[in-house]
Length: 326
Ligand code: SF4
Image (spheres, rainbow, N blue to C red):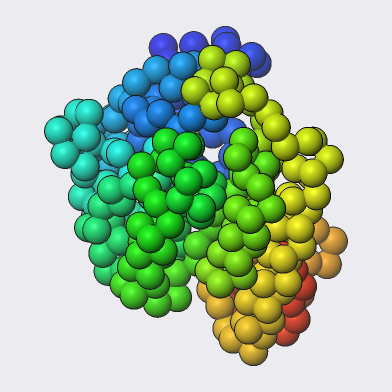
């Protein structure tokens, strides 16, 4: 046993995921892994305490990330989930320029991963070469997770997001121009100070028109020490919850329509696990734990977690598809 293996064995009871140079223990199933490309955050979103807790953005060197990704793949990982607090910022602290596009390019060509998925991007100064890399590489999922939080320009300004309504709409258009079948996941905040019925209706219209593939929504909650804390919490809790429920109900209808449009198509799925008579998988449009799943009727034998299968989609609900292995 190597020294690091002894160390892992000694302390693994108290930790879910341990990172060592050149060796990682996974807390996820064997076939997918999170690749944390940076720690901390240099943004100043008014409602967020993370920069206070985690400190400034520290990108990890590209070579280290590529080496870690290769090792994960050698150990059986098929899908890499690229994460950080603000993935769009990647490289700016370390190399004085954004290098997310280059990182994705190298992961796509050197890691051997069959799927690479981009999480926690930030809309301001989204690097065009990252969008191009997603469009160019078959093994980068046509999937972008981009928390937008709101659409009203006054609210976005108060949130210190560095982008307004027009910039947000332009960016979504650009994603869809360059990656025609991209799945966009976003999260929103309802009930931020200053959000009256007017701003909320603007947000509802935005969700109606943008037709996100996946969406989460949270009620605003003031965090001590953040710039927004001094704005108070003027929207009553009950009203915030009503707004969250309305947004989620609207999105459920949109998700159902998008899912129904996939009936009759054959989609590549990664198998996550077995449940009774079904295999549970995901398409490239879905990330583990947060997005939709595909219930695959098991007609073929010998399919295991981590296998990729072609699935003919036969039915759809708001949060799930059903299909059969082709
Ligand atoms: S919301 Fe995200 S990007 Fe904004 S400050 Fe917090 S961690 Fe950074």
